[in-house]
Image 1 (cartoon, rainbow, N blue to C red):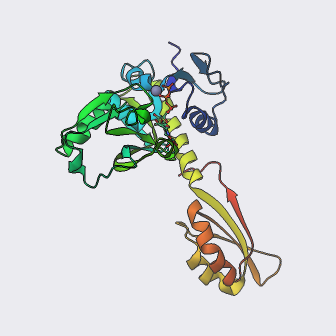
Image 2: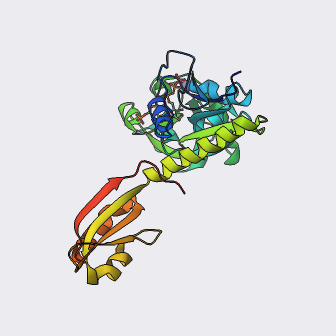
Image 3: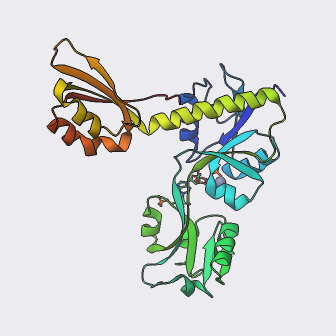
Length: 288
Ligand code: PRT
Ligand code: ZN
């Protein structure tokens, strides 16, 4: 026990790269030795534990790790006593019910009496219960998508992101069970160590600043002095933009932080209002 905050991340899989990237953007300097069980950051009191994603909720519940980064789908399926501290915006996918292309399924009630193959039996059981449905669940440990063509199941309940796997197996979406993304979880009990609590608070503050920076961009442009009011109305900034004088007395420079997805919808209006030299920059960190 070195008093460091222990963070569990996936050892090798779809969440590994993004989890490491997030921690590095928070300013933690560590080697990405995922073949080791854990590494300590050089510049901060945290240890990063590399685990299979399925084990992360249990390790967090048992306090082997203080917090963990894992998909909501795993958290829900494991039903371990943990709390979600933050959604992270990556590892997005959906748990779907899907059936063969050549079959029709028009309403949920048609699932009654059918057989469904899945690696998510608990989530599926709850979904069926909630919708007052009766179906047989076959629990598989992988390759669920081939179950209908093998004649083992009528439907599957599986994670989908691009939909390619469904398409390749001649399956189509029947109904959505839920949307999932990577989250940070902690044990239900508060950390009893004051030092670790402080580290956790600071880490969450850093993560939130990285996440909000990601959804925002820094917009800069030059405008004719007399179009300032019009330009300010177009800019979807939460805060008042920064206005700077230029050597040319008839011109101003305007800077603002805007939501990343708004840029393309305002660019033509900005140009029409006289804006020139428009530059959009990424923001690495944004402290609230
Ligand atoms: O070894 P370990 O147990 O740690 O890893 P794993 O193989 O169990 O998990 P991994 O790395 O595949 O996924 C980790 C997490 O990423 C999942 O728990 C989800 O939260 C999230 N995620 C995001 C996905 C997908 N997208 C995804 N597409 N998890 C799995 N898939 C699989 C899905 O099961 C299906 O087989 O990809 C296939 C479908 O993908 P598309 O793109 O063809 O629709
Ligand atoms: Zn797994």
